[in-house]
Length: 389
Image (cartoon, rainbow, N blue to C red; front, side, top):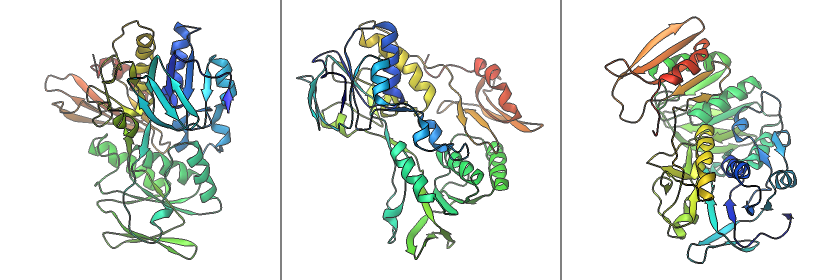
C-alpha cells in the first residue's frame, strides 16, 4: 500500500528501509524540506533498530515492540512517499528507472541501501532446511516463535552476532552451544587475552563453546535436532541458529552493470560507477572498506545527503569503536587498520581489561576495552588515527 500519493517522476529514490535508507532521508530533510523523496522497500516500511535484534530477548521485547514508528508515521514525519512491500527487480541506469513488483519509477538520483544477507553455509543432514538466520524483524519474530517453550539452542558462528545472541539467550535461561571453525570467539576483532576474558565470562554465564570444528550434519530426531560435529561431538538441540556473517547484496547492482567488489563500489562521494546512482550502508564498499556497523552508516549519510543535492562532500571516517553487546562482559573494540604494524599491550584492571595496539613509537592504533575499562572509550578514541582521513 502507498502511504501518500504516487511517486514523483524525478527527485530522489531510495531502495531499502533499513538504518541507511532512513538516515539518509533524515539528513536530506535537514537540508531540503521540499525535494520529492520516494522510499521503495520490500519490507512494510516501518522503522526499527536492527542492532536490538541480538539483545531483545533478555530485555523482554517482542518483535512488535522493536518497531519505533510505522510506515505511515515515517511518511508523514519525513514528508515522503513510501512504496512498501515492493521488490525491486531491475535498474535501468540509462533511462533512470527502476522496475518494481508494483510498477516502474523514474529517478533523478538513486540510492542503493540494499543491506546484506546472512551467509548460509551448505549443511548436510535431513534438517539442514531448519537452520534459522535472523537478519530482519520478520525473521526475528519467527525465531522467537520457534524458541518458545524450548530449552536448547545451537549457534553456528562465534563472531559479533553469535556472541551477542549467545549472551542474550543464556540470560533468557536457554542452554546455548556455540560452534566455530576458528580457535576462539571474535578472533578477528580481539587480541588473545581479551578473547579469553570474554569467553570465560560467557562460559560462566552458561555458554558452551565448540572451537576448531564444524557441523558435519544436522538431523531431525523426533522433537530434537541432532547436530554432529566434525570432531565427533554430538549436540542435541531444539533450534539451530546460523550467524556466520554477512555478505553485501550485489545482485541488483551487478545485473544493472554497476561495478562491485566485496560490496557495491563507491567513491568518497558515495557515487557508484553509474551516474546518479549512489550506495550506502552494509551493501557499499568505500575505499576497500565494507563496515556493517551503525557509526559508519551515520557518517556516510551525513556526506551523502549534501552530495544528492549537488553540494560536493567527501566522506571521512573518524575512529569508530564497535560495541559488542555482551552484558556478561561489556566490550568495546576499535581494531587496528588492516596491515597496521605494532603490537597489543595488555593491561588487566580491576573488573576488566584494557588492550592497546601500539606502533613501535608508542602511537595508539587500536584498542579493546572490556568490563570496567570501557569507561576509557572516549579518551582513547581521541588518540586513534581516522579510518578514512
